[in-house]
Image (cartoon, rainbow, N blue to C red; front, side, top):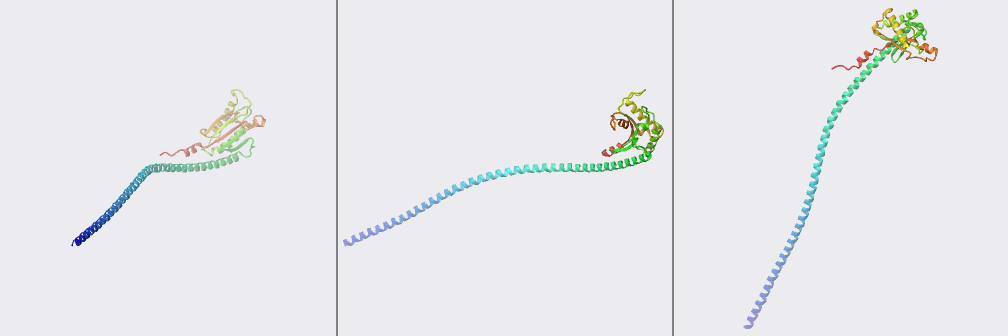
Length: 288
């Protein structure tokens, strides 16, 4: 009996011991799992912290990029505003330039028309001058060219009559032969009522003084006025269309160093004056 009791107690002790060992083993396993779980939690927390740091860095980077982008946007806005202002100014300048160009083109057109008109007038004048020269040469006839020379220079008609045909030496009295020649010239001029002309007296450079004539100036003027009087009084030319002038020795056509040259320089010249008033009218701007 005693042995059974001992066996039973031993069994209880062994069983209890086994139960406690199992219990402790289970608790240990649970603790191990909890530890592992805590370790996993710590790892997750570390990952989260690391992720948070990465996120913070990314956020900071993104914020920096955002600030940079905002700066670029502001820069672009500023440049865009400047560009718009420049475009506005450019449009104003272009409009002004266009108006200026338009006016310039209109002025060029007017000038071209004026030039065309002047060219037409000059061509018409040259034609009239040519006709006048032909009429004068036809009226005067076959006279020696040295005594009467009719020419056109720069659109002006010149009639040169030599001194020996018009006057005696050192005199301003017109000869009968000169009166005949002047009559033929007057006939042509009378047919052109609108023609104005100037009669010029010319001398050589030989000093001259006789009576009331003090020098070649006096002689040249007296000869010019003598021709004008004959054309007016004998041949009826309108005095308002004539001018008398003395040029003395200062506009020679040849050298005064030779006899022939001095003879050519002693002359009376009739200058058919261009009708400048017609050209001035063409140049006048029309009044608004």
